[in-house]
Image 1 (cartoon, rainbow, N blue to C red):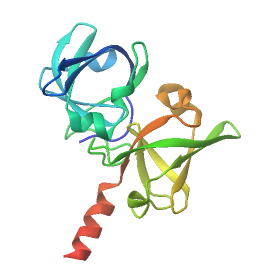
Image 2: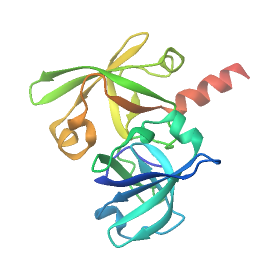
Image 3: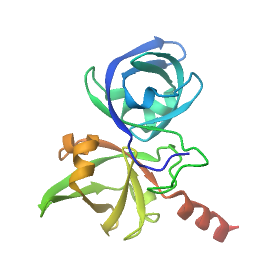
Image 4: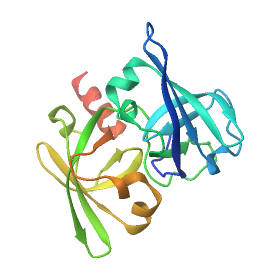
Length: 198
C-alpha cells in the first residue's frame, strides 16, 4: 500500500525483454533516496504501479514487468534516461499524507489540457468512462502515482490543481498534452459500489 506522496524521481537505466515466450521485461532504475533500506522482495511504486524489487545495487534496482503490467500502464513505453515517480510501500508507523493507493493501475489516460492558475497549473486528464463514476470533485485520484485532489469532473474527464512543489518534485512537470499517464481511482469508491450491489 502507498500514499501517493512521491519520495524521489528516479531515472530509467534500461528496459529490456527478458523472455520473449513469457513476455516478461526487466526495468532497471537509478535512484538514491529510496535505496535506503530497500531490499529484494520489497514493493515499490513506479509511476504508480506496484512492482517487486528483484535485484538491487548501491545506486539502483531492477523489477520484472508482467504482460498485464505492460498492458495496463505506461511503463512499456519508457525510454533510457526518462524520469519516473518512486514511492516505497507504506510502513504501519508512517503518516498517511496523501490517500490510500494500492499501486494497482486501473487504466492509462492522457493529459488533455494544461493552463496556469497563479503559481499552480490546472491539468486536465481524460478519464475512461468506466472509471468516471469513481471520480468525484474534491475526491482523490492517483496520476502516475501522485495523489491529486479532483478540482472538477465531467463524464470523461477531470482536472486537478497542481502546486509548484508537486510540479518540481514529480514527473508532472514533464507531462504535456497527449502524454500517457497511469490512473488509479480511489479504492474506497470501488468498495462502496461493490457493497451496494451485493
